[in-house]
Image (cartoon, rainbow, N blue to C red):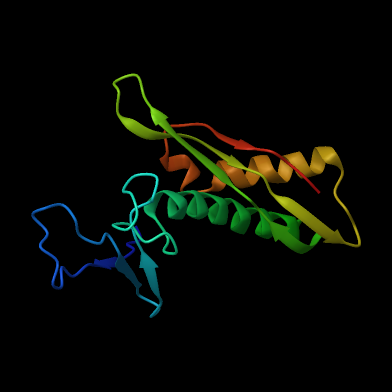
Length: 153
């Protein structure tokens, strides 16, 4: 078993708070020493109460799924002898109402664009690497909605 710690920290400051007109800007602190400025999404809480430049939980969730998939993909590609030169994934998450009326993440589309050097995998090999990465990704195995992989080389 592994455990992971992230500390989320917010301060009220001089804001009234009970009028619901407070900044949603806060920080995520990670065990390696990184601090990430975070906020609610402007799609959820309007400006100026959200901080558009900060990372919001929804985009961090999409990034975490994409990152997990990429890390497994890179590992499996290396084992298979394929040299990945560049990997970029403009991943896209979709939020919508579920059957009970709750707003949830309904889908994440991973859209990796990969450049190889030297030996390039066939379309079938590439699909196999993505399938293997998807089935090994801890986070993909933890969600209850579809994750689609749109392959691009």
